[in-house]
Image 1 (tube, rainbow, N blue to C red):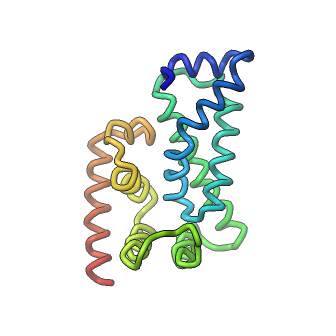
Image 2: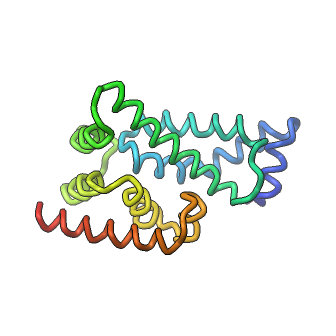
Length: 180
């Protein structure tokens, strides 16, 4: 595994950029895909957003200052790209982000890439009811098993605030699943 500082330097060096970008994609594509997929829910859309994420990383790597980890920076880009994608799709269909998200959840069963059972489907429906920040924190902590410090760096929020958001999300999910 290549050191992050070396990878960043290589990405910023024209003669090494193509090879470094290939390493970057191979190293991070799966983790970024699942972060995006947890937001957009659909495989094809997640692939599109992932591609846009890597294009944005490629175009903006010179602006990466190293104030955070490269992974955190890319995760933030992926998250923002996914959220913007949802907003654009909802706007195009003339519905709210929440209504669009509900539609995505109800289409999950038809997605050939969705491997969950009824319990997973119920959980996804419950997650869709959460406010955006709680949804992001829950997905990052529960599904991607990120540490609060990593999530804090990605979302630019305090660890205490994240813990509170996660706790509230879990309580709301428990309540939703009890009622359903």
